[in-house]
Picture 1 (cartoon, rainbow, N blue to C red):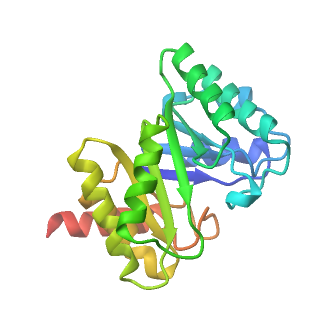
Picture 2 (picture 1 turned 120 degrees about the vertical axis):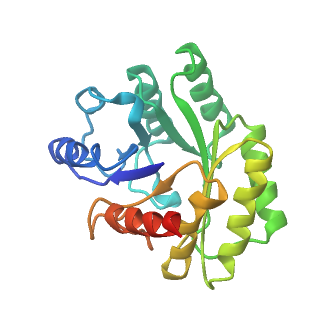
Picture 3 (picture 1 turned 135 degrees about the vertical axis):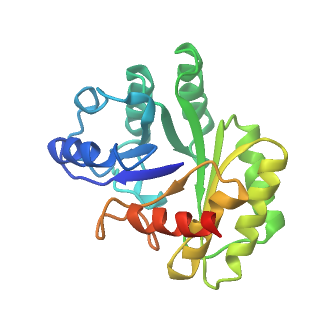
Length: 227
């Protein structure tokens, strides 16, 4: 599956971007940390099961600058409104994360919990990545998301190996490397069994460094599948 992030700064622009994304994407990520005075009721109206809601704080590479309780409460609102996915960081406090998990259960599990972990300055060893993976699973992830930065093309090998490991034990995983040298991992991740890949709607609308556009990603996948 391909997920296209919406990085608009207003609710109106977010709606417009979402309308453009839905025909191209399997899932649309709504980055509500970027939107000023977000109105979830206006955004989670159509095709809610295909929307991932992410509210990334500054320490995790996002824009949300409010209180942690307020940040997670918005994710709880997204669950209540029927979002298909909610993304919360592994580093989130246990009490707040468990509150979100309980809310998902209360709503019959219609929202899938993504537990994410981002490393912006490099890629750990394979064994360290496995430890992070298992911590995500132990803390209730329906989908594990581990994203690192590639300082060398070789860094992508550990990430791709981790995807293969997750596939063997039937755990959904999203994993790739950021940065120019990590682009190959974004292209190859689906072939190793990644649950989802991210691609931007257009140049300039990337939500992370090294992100290809959705048209570029589809071209690469088409070429590789024809081989």
